[in-house]
Figure 1: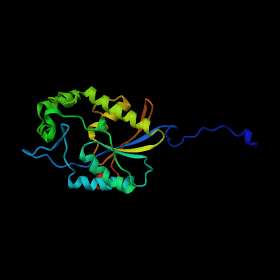
Figure 2 (figure 1 turned 30 degrees about the horizontal axis):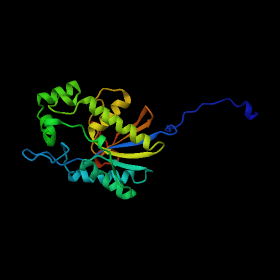
Figure 3 (figure 1 turned 135 degrees about the vertical axis):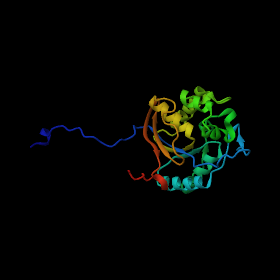
Figure 4 (figure 1 turned 180 degrees about the vertical axis):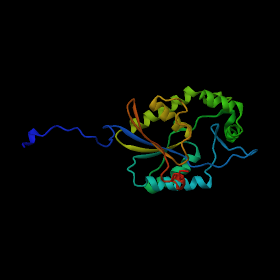
Amino acid sequence: MDERDEPTEYRQTRYKPPDGATELLLIRHGASAPARPGRPFPLVDGHGDPELAPEGREQAERVGERLAEENLDAVYVTPLRRTVETAEPLARRLGLEPRVEAGLREVHLGEWEGGLFRKMVAENDPVAQRMFAEERWDVIPGAEKSEAFAGRVEESLTRLAAAHAGGRIAVFTHGGVIAQALASATGARPFAFLAPDNGSISRLVRLGDLSSIRGFNDVSHLDWSAPAPLT
């Protein structure tokens, strides 16, 4: 049969980012030090700034090992040291100097900063119940307005994507920021992607105003990631 007579076929292929798109690896910092009554975390510009706990440092090493072979154009952190400390093993392996992106710092928790947020949630405080029911951070007294938080996260991601068009970057950031970024990308409810695990990797592809989620809460590099046996 002449090749020109072969039937046309349209096969399924693996995903490939569009030309000029930026792949952002959104990495939640490792587990931070526990909050203790009477010992509030130090503050940086009003934000609680705990260091990593020992298990968080181990998670940071596992992230560094996982991403050491990735072709990364840049590593970003926030002004808060838990992201800086989590990024350090990867930056060291790659020989990259982390860049600070202040717009991707965690949502400001107002009067619940310094570790009090954890206590209020653990004790099922009525305001915490309302926060989850209404899916808004700003029911916490003095907390950052939800619209302002969403706006600064979007502005930062848009700018970073434009600066690294066609490339791939690692962004070490916070659970609330990742939740907001992925909810915005999907048009989902604000808390739809709440609580990515410490040390997890989520993948976001951006091209202009278009966003695509290529992965959420990847923890395959962490020791506890194997699924529990079914019972």
